[in-house]
Length: 260
Image (cartoon, rainbow, N blue to C red):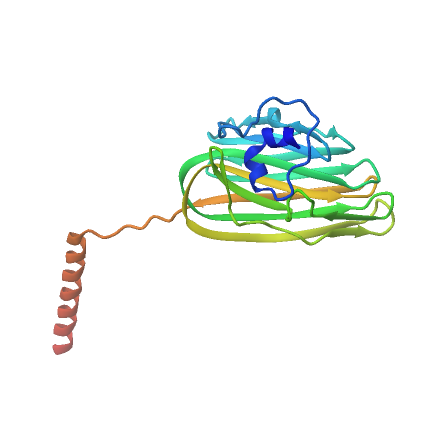
């Protein structure tokens, strides 16, 4: 737990249960001093891995990165992650996990990207999961001890993270029937939160859940978005004067037409 706290200090400050302990040897945190490029860490119970090496910049547009990992073994599960990181800013993601043991596995994906430094006033999260049952016939995907919802988003400046108020999803998703034949799709919906304009230069997200049943598969898709404060322009006094004069002229013109 101490290793995870050192490596992922900003996220640990906002995750109520704390990320699972990490047995991998890592000497520094990708979040330690603010992000200069996107990062992704994946957890499966007491194992974790840095998947940031799979993130590549877009050749057609600046400030956009993509990720498409192969299927990787992590602890007693398999993981695969796809996504787009945009400094505009938003993060869209897709995560697929397979349980390789009959015991419940806690999965967590912690990701983040630098964004255009600015005042932001609205955040949005959306997501859903498709669950295919395993060999026991009944598979349950539920929230984990890491955080009380499936998806959460954070705006940060350096070390300081702020929950964006777009926590999403608590209801279990269950697939039950003949083993390895039933797929249940659970749409977690969309959450929007407006707040006092706040300066952010990083956008981070957390996807976490538990998954049981040997051979079961959970496939997530979702997105976290920040939107800037809408600009408000106060008219100059001269502009107000011209506007008032225009109203008078229009009123006078109308009066003359009525008299005619």
